[in-house]
Amino acid sequence: MMTRVTQILVGKDITRTATITSIYDGTNLPADGEILVLDKNKEVLAAGSTIADSDIIYLCQGTGTTYSYTNDAGTVVSGARKLIFSDPIEGAKVRRYAGTAYTAKSEQVTTFQAITSPLTAGTEYVLRIVYKDVNAKRGQFSKTYRFVATGTTSEAVFDGLRAAIAADKGARIVGSGTTTLILTGKEIPECSSALTDIDKFSMVEFDAFLNYVDSDGYQQACTLASATVTTKAEYGFGTWELVRDAEKDTMGYQGIMDQTSFPVIAPALRAVVDETYDTIVIEHDRTYLSPDNQYVKQAPMTTVVYIPYTATSNQMTDVLAVLNPWMASTPAALPNVTF
Image 1 (cartoon, one colour):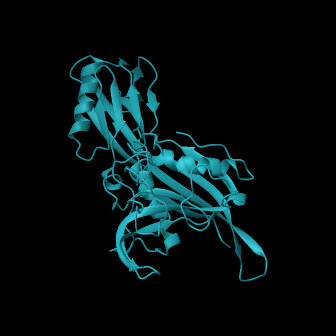
Image 2 (image 1 turned 45 degrees about the vertical axis):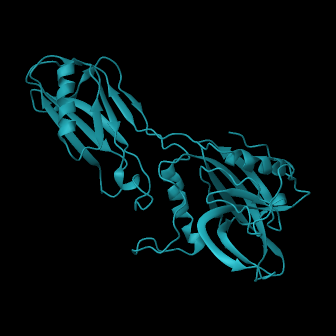
């Protein structure tokens, strides 16, 4: 049974080729990272075209790989560019057409308000952090920071705890603030440094508990001026880490099933580190004749296009000028995508 197949195209922040009339004539070829919309014959589809002009379209991405070949007329064409094509998108079978704008990621922030009780010199304060994002460890992974007060102010206690966090080379949070204690998750370098990172992108998520040790040696919750406030980690949308992981997830559709036996032999990823992307998602069915019978079946597919959010060129504008009218003319009359 066929499951949903996802294909990804990743554009770049580039100046588009001024005029492309054909992807075959050897002139005005798509640039590396340029996205084109093609008709059913894989010719460039003009802006404003509808399903009446071509009932099937393809999305096409230029890559950085070039080669030379001899065409049917015997002419040597140099500098031809390897292109990546989407699966055919049949107008009558498009189910969803949507866009999502880039959203920045943000780390979790937990803020403890000023301690009102107890504030006694010699009291031991305990800050316990329980991490919720560490799945490889059986049970809970936690860290504890301690400080014995020499004064009677909340700020002095927080200064001591901040110093304890700063002294921990393995800390996964940062302590800041003055009259309050602000805990902010750190970026995880193992999954947010390069395209070759092994781990999938993740963010530090934690619960924090601020206690003191009473006269019987038991930990009790400190009394605070007001409730503790936590802003959860936000993974964002269209970050380069998420685009990279999406590319890796679809490698199996290209026949690359083993990504753990190194070195992994696979095409270079097309995401760009520190780039930000807007996203177009097209969900559609593909009709095919199954070898086990004589009638046409349908397989669900998804085509995803990432184009840089900070583009100084007209890359996204040009692509939508072709896609929006065509999608509006399909039987589903899909609404325009705008950013």
